[in-house]
Length: 264
Image (cartoon, rainbow, N blue to C red; front, side, top):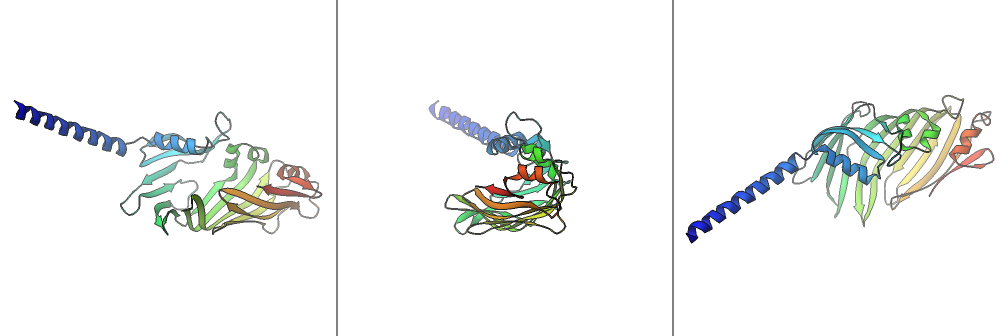
């Protein structure tokens, strides 16, 4: 009886272990997309939402939405759903493809790997076109400015590297704001602008104004330890001072016919 009893216990234990491993694998494989949505919600302090998510953790879609935070109103979603597909491998723990038909010229590829004795998240060269109205979902000051126009983002050799417990961007990101307008001004459009983020040991930020603009924006800054340090000026083309006075008051502290742009 004892050998038989031991064999039965061994068989029972093996069956339970197999069932447990099988259930764990199935749960991991078919984990609902809502888990990803909940994680993004928490990490962004309820400012980036993935609404009406469907599919699984590994392949699904959701409405990518900007919000001013928990309990706020006026959240705005992209015109078409964001889709994702995760393809991990032994040499690359995370390989993620993102796409949104409204806004991506081609799917964005993200890959997490080990580089220079630290983790690095590589981003494929990407081109995005986003409606500036989407930013109003974040609340003030975007909903006050009510910007209209197109935001074109292009990345080149972009990667995010973890160095001494801080995230360090490498490569280059160029953001162009074309034919920008605001409900705070009767001049339409205000102009076109370029924002560049240049990665390195101390990433740099450069803001400039394109030709034939009524509102003139210029400045520079750095990104250190996850904080933006930026100083710039907003002014007007000759003859536009009165028409843009209210807008300058909203953009920053007035200094005569200019407004100081400051983040620290």
